[in-house]
Image 1: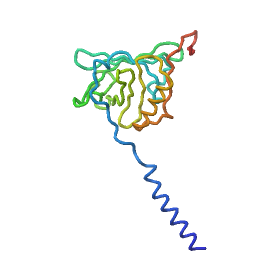
Image 2 (image 1 turned 90 degrees about the vertical axis):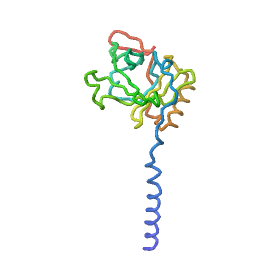
Image 3 (image 1 turned 90 degrees about the horizontal axis):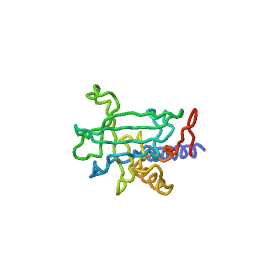
Image 4 (image 1 turned 30 degrees about the horizontal axis):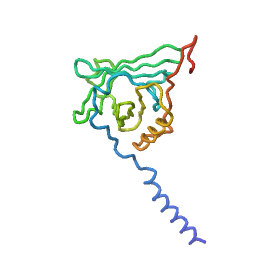
Length: 195
């Protein structure tokens, strides 16, 4: 009996040792797209979906991001959304391209410009996938804590959305964490409803 228990313990230990690497594997290093045409990327984008995050908690939907080139060569970022009470919320920031070898690896800040010398006010904003005609973009960062699906149109077919979720999964993002962003909110007295 003691021999059977010993074999069972050894077998259990081997299984644990074998299973730990399978569960602790980290995704491959995230890469940004190559050859981003910044002029084609500029303009208005609609947020189709995202990982929930604390700085967008107030947003109920109708979320957009508009990028425009500034005279200093940096990019103005204007994020807007409709809040649950029906009012609009906006945040203006700035993006820079610190990696001249790959302009799809941007750094974005929404802190006041007086603090722009502090490295921690700049967050990674990487374009990790892009439609051939810049009709959609997947945005993330190396730690995969943040993720967005953006589109040039406020609506996206379910088939295209599912394809992008599969693409995101292949890049190491978790589709079950992604939540869709309503783009059809109508403001009514005291709040919003989906049309």
